[in-house]
Image 1 (cartoon, rainbow, N blue to C red):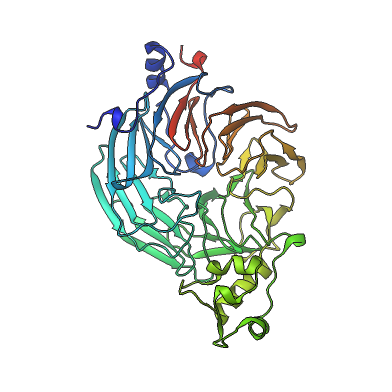
Image 2 (tube, rainbow, N blue to C red):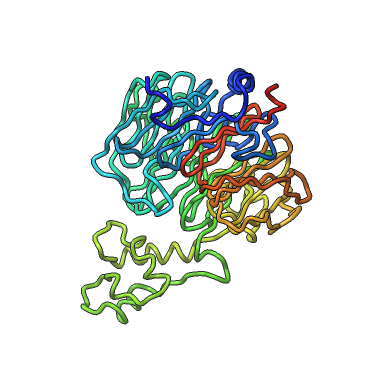
Length: 482
């Protein structure tokens, strides 16, 4: 069994009695997927409001790089990383961060990623017996609790330039993946017992996406909600058959949905989708007359003038051959024309195109980018880049407050968690803001870790587990463990 020194040295800041209490009290419940039980981002217990390197720190261990969020699986913590050995799954003890095992797979090649991303970004998902890890560059691999490989399902690397981010979800006896990419987008369902394919649904109209889907249970039914470019869609998770479509979302899906009060909430924003900042493109024929210098009926990046369209050449070049054809140009032109930025609330029970029939409310101001909306205690919370918090009545969309500055002018890639009447959310720059839940805006604390944060924390039984750029942290209020 690997020693703790393979991953790092655990830093214990309290006495042995505190650690024993943590090991017995913090493993009563699990957090076994991205954003926790049901993907709803709702924690449990009373986590500390003030914490850091000197305060309420149970332990801290070094980690190899990766952006996946930690999951809590009984007495264990699972997450992935990119190491010299390849794409690596790490299993740590929940009580002290000690490493129990690590397993690696070596893909033929790593997919390209954004400068802020990592080939190990999707969060694992676990059930009673197994943990399932998805790597865009490799496919899916399942391990038992002791790190023994149960099965693997290799997949071709997706056609992307910014990497893979959507995490798998476990639904019934299925493991479901969203594999939207610049060419060949599809949903894939594998049998959790042996990794064989159960169904595959093509999504040819979709392009790159980074959003994890959510299973919406209501009125005795279950729907797989999948954000995507221009459209939000619902599918039957058992068969992959499409239920309904909402149009007018952003060009690239980056945040996951939320549910509550009988409604579905989704947020989408991307450059070029705001009414006063739209990116428009002339028809290919018109543009070719001006810029197709060699008259070969396609563009190279050098032929296009400087500006927002040329900056997105690689997005238009779907087959990555270095040229943009008329078909590729018109595809992107249509996407820019149809794109919309908004927070939407959707009523259940729709079939087919439901944009005009099942929209409960819509907000087009103060929109989050990557950070997912949070439903908590009758309200919907969002965090816009720059540290601008908003809160809405979940049933009506009435703003309780908008664009309130949290005092940290940063981007936000982590998603918020609601727990104990509070909202916890981490900035990219490594400050975890704690807001008071309610109709009025109040910052309770700003907790600086000194490292970037892209992962979403887990909060179970008052134990806050958070991944930063180089460490995994476990925080617990001292009074909770005496």
